[in-house]
Amino acid sequence: MRQWFGIKEKTNPQYKFSAVCNRISQSKAWITTKLLTVARESSLIALNLWFEEKNVHGWQATGNAKLDQLTQLFRDQYLGQEIKIDDFDNAAHNQQRITGNPWQPLYQDCAVHFTNESFHYSGMVEDGEQYIWPGPFITEKTLKCLLGGTAFVPVGQFETYRTLETLGLQFDYDFATAWDSDPGNLSRAESIVTLIDDLNQFTVEQLVSKTQDSSSHNQNHVMTGKFFDQCQQKNEESIAQIFDLIC
Image (cartoon, rainbow, N blue to C red; front, side, top):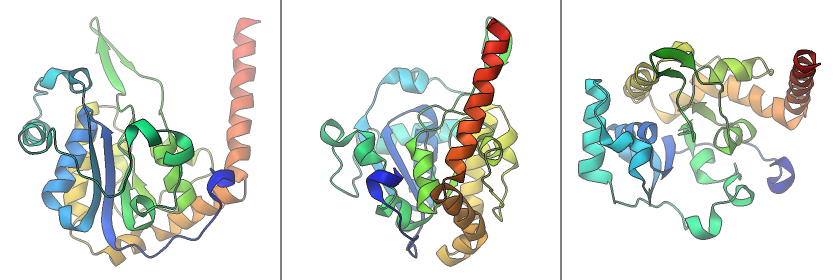
């Protein structure tokens, strides 16, 4: 991404929040609907038409009243609706050589980005057995925020902040982040929905002030190559552990 798009300084954002819902899934529908409901005028939101019922579990109720209400609201008001902020086209543009660009309004013109990652499940139950799905699964959706100096809320698997902190990044945001350690898929999502209400009380400038130190540190950590080095070291340690187990 550094080679493809170069390095720039973070601009002064005009919006509080941003989010993309390209392939509609359960968690993306919740967060996108919440932002459209309480902060539409102060957010950059992209919503596309890519929908498969399997990705929303056939619209089955979760038993969480707040999330189920958002699901119904999405079905009633936004399903089948396209909200565009640029000329992005799935058929022509859905490749990382294009989508990996952090120097675009979705990341540069907002104070806080909600990542809507591709996979958000952590705490699972199968055949009566509980387990944690390995992760966190992180894509360019998150990496763009790091390189672009943009604060973000990880809408994905649990311990996204914690895992990135082990690689030298920091998330000393001046707002609640303890929910990142919650493996419960529903309770973690509900906490993020509540966080949107909390953050929406602040101005753009206040949100930048609450996050700027960490975002600047993270951008510098990526730009200097230190993040790459620590990822490589982690990979080498993991490979060594694998060989210890199989040899």
